[in-house]
Image (cartoon, rainbow, N blue to C red; front, side, top):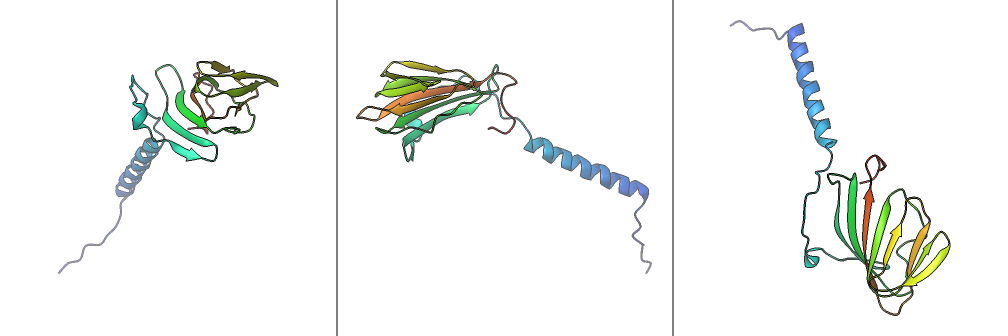
Length: 157
């Protein structure tokens, strides 16, 4: 009985190297695949879970790129009386806030205003702003936020 020796040729090593590199490339491409572009959508209020937090609750409707934006995000916050969703801050993206219920105090660049249902807030890029529920009932508001092409930092969702 003759036993064959297991010798690897240069050709075998080259094929193994190419195959391994291709596999690594495919896995890396799959991991770095950008999120799918959001198309036209209808989202029922009752289909979105309200996640409670220390200040009230949040319903996250979507956060995704669109055909014209690097990211479009929409959530609805229910803010308990005498609460703020977060400390005053500023960010690169712009946002639109539409008040559904309650009374909010809005501060932009140190100037404050009280507003109620139907009011609209626009927070421009890099402007210091904050919100506080100054009413006696929960305030509910929709937040629509977006990043224009090329403005979204690489480390955000």
